[in-house]
Image (tube, rainbow, N blue to C red):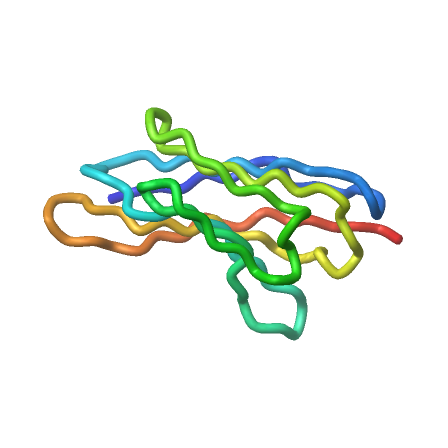
Length: 119
């Protein structure tokens, strides 16, 4: 089994910054991708940013130029640096990871961390 533990959410004023972290632990052979999704009240969960094992990144259009996803492979940890935050960025942010435990890839989710941006 694999656990994802998130940290770093909170309340910030518009224009401010936050940094989210997510550490994976457990029976990990390799991690193919790590990333962040978010879900605001009444809306579907959406991809925010992801980073593959080779370092390629993918961002939602709404966060390009403001958010940066990075990864520490030695620590099995993914980070999301969020700058120039806007009220519409308020949501529960979920860490996501595609982990190979033995020979099969599984998808895991963190418990979610609340990000609230006040105007």
